[in-house]
Length: 175
Image (cartoon, rainbow, N blue to C red; front, side):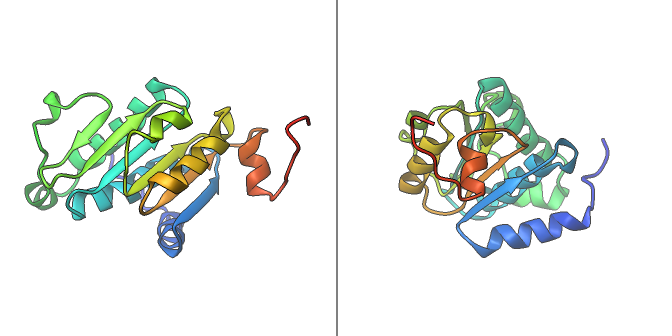
């Protein structure tokens, strides 16, 4: 397995995510921004006891992919980190849509839908490929109410709520 790339823009991206509660990103597929957002939020779950993190995408198979990113990052981290931040149960016994740490923290992947968020009260939330979720705006509103810490939305280009929101465009429902 290749090491995680050391692109300079990752450092700047992490600094930007540290600056505020809510971060919105426009991305291209080759930036590895989803990986970076997963790594950023996973760090909090690993370091902060009882820290809940939610990942949400349009479909369940995509959210499983994000959880797989988190599992890969933990598995390939320095052995000293894995020794200090242990899993709640062996990796092969963890479900495909969760990563549980023995400090009580968790990363759970949920499919699209604003009503999915209401079941949780996480510290952090990642909404991936927001342009392609019909109810991304409702997910944003729910995340404001449910999430205690960081909220990250990212997407490649696409029309809809996310693009409008990123560019301060307000439309009537009839448009």
